[in-house]
Picture 1 (cartoon, rainbow, N blue to C red):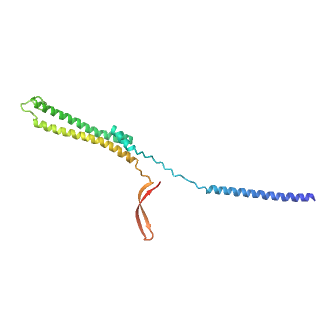
Picture 2: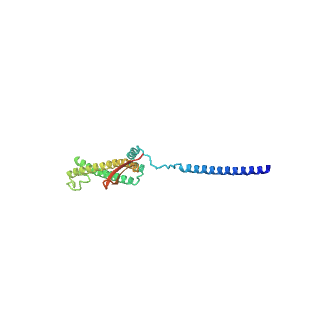
Length: 207
């Protein structure tokens, strides 16, 4: 009789343990599902990282200063190396014509001074009794070469100043903001009330 009760007790205990294990399994499955759902519910934030070069407000003045110290150095600072030969060619041309006209002016001036001193042995007098180049011609030649000399020096100074301005403007343009965070663009929108299209201009500014 006792063995019969013992068998019934063992049978009931086995049923309860199996039910408890199933409940535990279901609870573990439910907790796993909840954890999975929580993981799935976590929002994924993607940072929009746009690499932008920092703006240096002193860059234009620095480029201009470099070009003032040495022509072409500001262009090298802006990495516009192809402009350096053009600058030196323009300034070199101005200096060449200045030196050439200065030498010619000195020749005619020295000859005119010797004429005034009573000498007839200058290079423009010739071998005859009358000079090959008159005194008036010497004066006109001096005026012409002096004017050409002044124009040449003005052109050289202008090229020097243009070299400084070009370096400054280039440095400004290199930092000009053209990204989509600051843009002015036209747009087209269909108006459903009037059944017509609307044209406009949109200013976009994003922080």
